[in-house]
Image 1 (cartoon, one colour):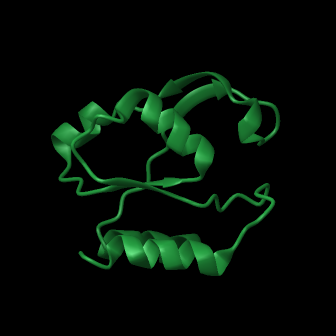
Image 2 (tube, helix red, strand yellow):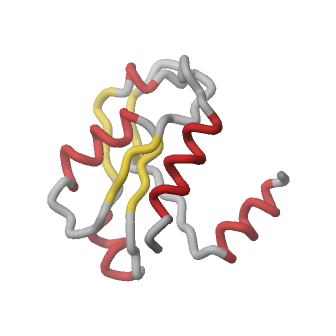
Length: 105
């Protein structure tokens, strides 16, 4: 799928993508080396956008999110990482968990 098609899909389904880490020191692309990071200001986003749920892509994003935003009054879920560095990328598992997340929507 092209980038343009992906953007169209996200827009059509009212899905926003946002990195929880806005800046950091990192070696290569390994999440395990993330240091001295700053997180996104979700308060600002939530005050302007009708967010219904937050889906976190992988364990590192989930841990960082919890450190600052665990008390948000929104449902949030951690999905398996889709990073190529993930030793166990299970496409079927990821989609099954995503479907389960939206099952009651």
